[in-house]
Length: 222
Image 1 (cartoon, helix red, strand yellow):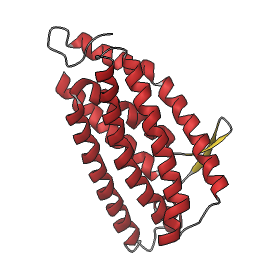
Image 2 (image 1 turned 180 degrees about the vertical axis):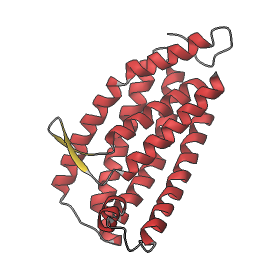
Image 3 (image 1 turned 30 degrees about the vertical axis):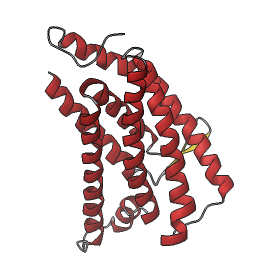
Image 4 (image 1 turned 45 degrees about the horizontal axis):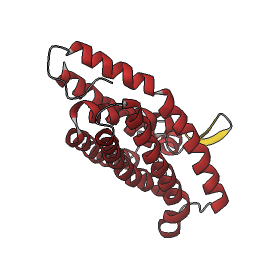
């Protein structure tokens, strides 16, 4: 059961983070806030990484995170190769294909860098909080680690993508007032997602615990 769960959570984490990076170039409005369309995928990814950290420990969580980042680099390379290939004469969606998948270099580089840093930070904070509470009050580490690392994730991505990288590799340089506005709005939405997914965290945690109640489990009940 636990091995199947680890595989499932690892796949869900990788898929969610990959999709979040692919759709990050689209800007949407949620609750009056302007955010990247990748916010939901990021939320699912943080939930999965917290569950992996909770059930399997820090080492396994970091392995999944870093392997996924490597997969993201490969995925982006494959996308660029597909964009570079000569389209067939009868393929009429070349412009749409290029627009959808050919995100700016600043967005892609900022997204990959941010994912590497914030996801590893989430694992570290999660276990610091778990040690501090002696394994109790799982909600504190689920919400606490995510809200702290999401702040870094949001601020780092926005500043890199719209404020720093455009100075060196081209792109649109946004005013700092707009950058701050994006950070605040997107962070509020992401914190809301983190709070809403806490019951899901408990449900999956409890489900696995019930399935393996006759086995030694790596986490304690609250």
